[in-house]
Image (cartoon, rainbow, N blue to C red; front, side, top):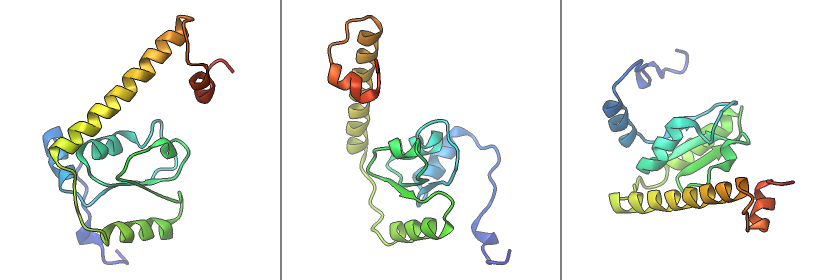
Length: 141
């Protein structure tokens, strides 16, 4: 190509999950440059977060719900801003959390999810006690 980057990229097509995880663990970062997404960051970003791999994601509204330490945002549709985030990340030391840190973060996420599920069940059953939280998430308004 005109930028001379052809040797830096290749298409993987289908690869087994164990190879995907190996590639992800050794990646500099995961890039998620979408303008449309059904969930926060999509599956690749969820896997990156779980493994402590940095993720650079577009700042579309659903992605802005991501609240993780290794997630960096760039202005959607701006290759200049994306390049700046990539350069910024490349200039930092490549430190990854160890297994114990990743497990602790995972348990914190599970606790938060459990609390949310309990609140949803309480709300659905009419026994919702946390009115302030209900208003915060927009339930009952």
